[in-house]
Image (cartoon, rainbow, N blue to C red; front, side, top):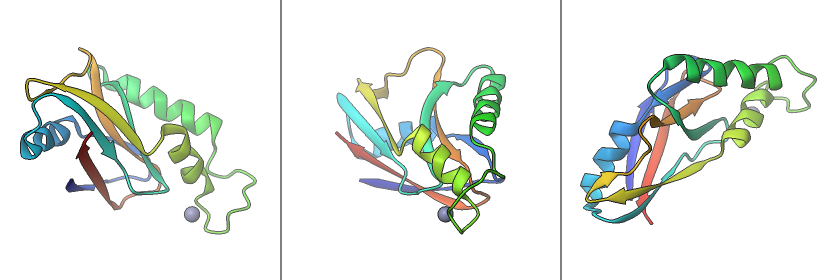
Length: 129
Ligand code: ZN
């Protein structure tokens, strides 16, 4: 397994990590198969979406904010319940096929670490399989 640190800069932010995950493919020596990218956090997630038009990520963040407002009627006493809910909506892992030592993403796809309670230093764990 390869572990990476990702520094986030805002409370809510999608950080592009495709290049980092591609580096993991090389470091793991994986030629063919599938890779799992896992985020070991409860207020951050990971997703795959369009990396060509940055408005797409902005719209996803807007939709999540509408769906899960920060100042909701939450029970969780830490004050970051919205971040926990958004993290579950995005999920903690994605799997990406690897072919000839390269990530096999769709033309417009990129991998994003989803920060919902930053800024913080987050971890990204990448395993073959
Ligand atoms: Zn919390």
